[in-house]
Image 1 (cartoon, rainbow, N blue to C red):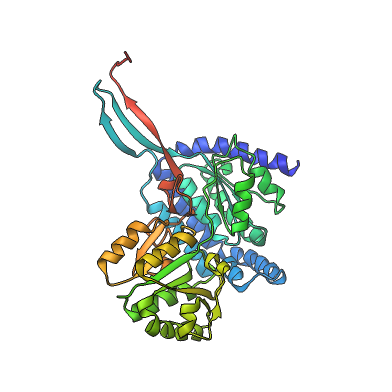
Image 2: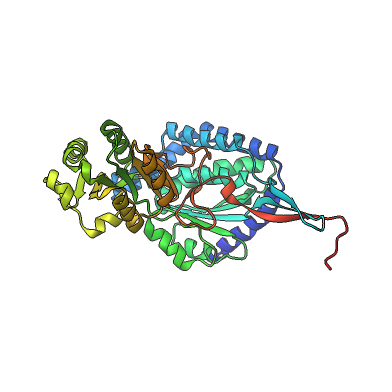
Length: 418
């Protein structure tokens, strides 16, 4: 069987499986997810061993330290994956929820009810925890899922998918509700993107080049998760120590993830005092700073920022910094260069905080908090399927509810249209 034929078979079987998954009760789905979580921890040594093969190949192929960190699994991370599944199991089931009812003049009762999307295709790179996160969210929301992970994580993804699929089989549920494409060839992606009869939506997670490839070649609607050019604006009233702690956390804790800080904006009134303070702090922690002329006036050792730097998602210990003319300057800069992921303001001025929230239209907008909180789990959604930077049909971190749509339901008592 060719790759194209195999992909079509996977898609057809997933469509059939989705019909069965849509009928499951919340109780059955929750028990399934709980068993899946237990199976992950029970099989942690094997998962870590398979992951070691991917790490070795990644080192040989020259993956960066940040990419290797995204790829790496140890028993603690496997436990965290299992805990994330349990959190999804504990969440309210959105399927069947009636989101509103209203009565028409002819006494018809009209409402909207949440239903699964059907079959969700997910194309992702590096992070093998996406395999379990995506499975949990898609299955809990009554969908089937077709996964295509990156070649750099093939061993990890295969073993995680097998462990989870075994739990479907044990319960007599269709194993095709969770399918992982086993091919590393690019053809596996292109053929998957042609299955518009059977796959309802594609969600890509990875680098910008992957997402642009998916958007260009897909015949299926795509929920895009572009790069995370995340900004923090230090307002004139900001507390320096608060700003310091937030900036360190946002930039240094995990620089290789999409919610890490990439551009820092500083109010011009603070430049003389805050720029040397933050330059010494960050450079002492190994961060390379690239600044505009106003920043380098007070931090002459910083590199000169170019136009490309304001667009850059470094995913590394590099930070671009600009001094701006107050809140207006910060909002203008963000509106010009933001990737619509996450932005934060550090301020003691309530009016400025409220204006920042109203006028910055990224998926997540924060006040006095690290951009690292832009995460479905941290925001109370359980595991997330991704962070959408597209406003249709979901925007920002996507949880269970975002994997459903609504249908109209109508109750009548013999009414006919005149």
